[in-house]
Image 1 (tube, rainbow, N blue to C red):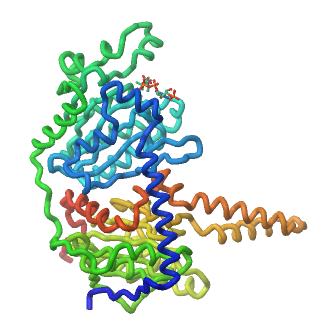
Image 2 (tube, rainbow, N blue to C red; image 1 turned 30 degrees about the horizontal axis):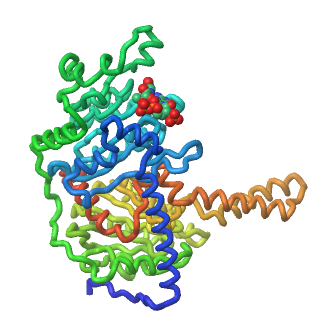
Image 3 (cartoon, helix red, strand yellow; image 1 turned 45 degrees about the horizontal axis):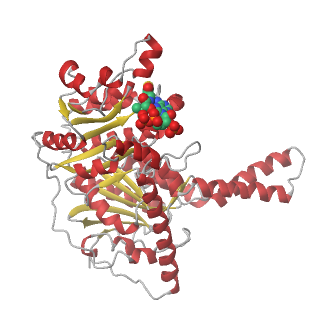
Length: 535
Ligand code: COA
């Protein structure tokens, strides 16, 4: 029987308690998203509009064929960082269709510190380009930026993943036939000038658009030459004299229309890699997820209850159901796309790790994308398990996760701790996309355990010097460690630093997975297995 049978009791006090708690978390998430979507200060927005410009999210909306089937990357990046709070990192990144072509729109928000690049802005721009490269998405750059944030230059300039890497990535993608289109809708200064300059085709807007390697301030400071920004690098100059831009637009709308028109001529047909079926809604209501997920991450529940609310018709073709039961593996369809699912149902033992590695090989053989539903406290520990070789069995799973070539998508639906994060395709294992639920927690281990470990180390040091650790000091030490882990384990802390691609409402999981799966299909990936060796 493939249909998952739900044993959920919606009337139980646990369900109601969980439901209310998740509702509260989602409402907090929506509030944070609403706030960052406003962008910069009221004054900055007024100034922007007065210049006849559209606000950044209006620009993106105007470009998209269909606002519903798009995926935003890093909406909460830059939130409450240690030194500053930068709404959406001053850069909006949205994947969707433009003129029928799957594209990523990377757009500066000039109302946030003139659209200048903080370290997190560079990181977000590079992550967006990485997504474009891995999924063959046309890149649309909506440029409106003062370039490097000069207060932050050490964090953005010289390293491998600095500002310069943006232009490198653009060149590499262009060489692979991935379109690079820019519209200069505002300032585009210094290093930033390479964005339109490195693009396949570039548009510039009258009066507002400027492109120059050194702006009027810099030219005056360096050479004493006095000029205004239009004389130095305005739309007229670049579309008639320098040839840096290919098209002149009267305003934002005309520039955005030109992008749509350019994308109609890229001669591209999306490949069909998967044997798709008609999408069928799950049998069970997705809203139940709120009541299923316990408020305490340590509490165990059957992850099939979640799977049944995400996959088509709530059907799972389960693999090795009764073996290695702390990992659920099986094939299903999501919005009509076939997928292999690996979902945690407890800590990883040797058996569950081996089962996971075996299942990943099946997905690779059949070219089926993999979904990881991550809720993991780690691998099992202890003498008995070390003796049995948990380290090498776990390594097999980590190896399979690392080297499998089909698209992987990870959703952190609960805890993401220790090596469990690796085995279940955490950020370092290059999932094409990684999203988190607002109840999730991510850290090397739980705060309580970390406090105990560090206190035990410190206590040994103190006693080896012949002293005794005062109980009050020990408690206060342990509390401070727990609090630090609590803060740093928050999904907001992670998302602000782009350790994920965004925090999502669990109710949106199915549609986000469906859209993401569709975006991954732009690549025709060849098998990389060995052929037959004639021995
Ligand atoms: N580094 C750090 N901060 C910068 C900055 C930069 N390159 N450019 C602008 N800012 C800050 C401003 O200090 C201001 O901060 P505040 O809100 O705290 O006062 C904010 O960004 C907005 O700048 P402002 O000049 O008021 O906005 P604007 O829309 O009129 O002009 C620019 C925006 C980007 C066109 C203009 O500020 C400019 O030309 N900046 C210098 C760009 C430059 O030379 N960059 C060199 C990169 S290598």
